[in-house]
Image 1 (tube, rainbow, N blue to C red):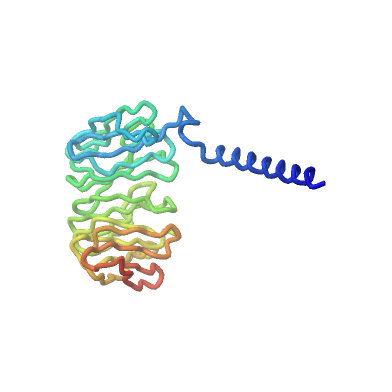
Image 2: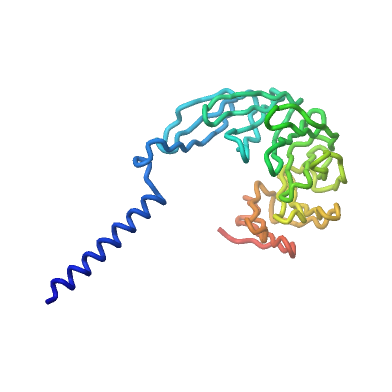
Length: 275
């Protein structure tokens, strides 16, 4: 009498197991079930090359020369391209990820260090530290659309999350330039910590945190009013920072602090979390 009942139980378990396995394989198919799978990593090296690493086969298979002083490598948001700058060559290089070939070099001027994109990907923005210039470039034709004067030695360009402003970190004069994203016109320039090198922007585009690796402070800039909101004291010179996706906390790494410094982005309170 128990055999039919047990058979139904075993049959039901087998159906559930097969269904679960099918769902699992669809969601997380191992690479041997996807012979056409392509997962690549692109790594710049000091000798001016980009090494292409196949993450499925776990080996490097190509080296592409991009030029002296490669920096600021970014993935284009809508096109199958990786872009970066050659600081020594004074140009932006474009790598086609389908062919894994350098397809273009866009001359921009002396000493570019970083790039960013408009929200729709139609424009590329960069700065040239050698002549204090901000540039907007058409992502498809690679023509320069506009130029603007920046502060001294601009080394970083950031488009705010709302797409309305371009932030330029000027290392030479310790300022953050706030430019109009459409025209590149300078709205205002805010004095920040000396020799700034990096900036993190809140998701609502209300504030930017500007870091200097030579200072024990980090500057908070109110982007809506265009003023310095605070200079926050740190436990040591920072080397890097990471903003939580929700913008609630900014984590600052400093070897001198012997811990991770967490900044509440709303109250500006600084705390240390031990290792």
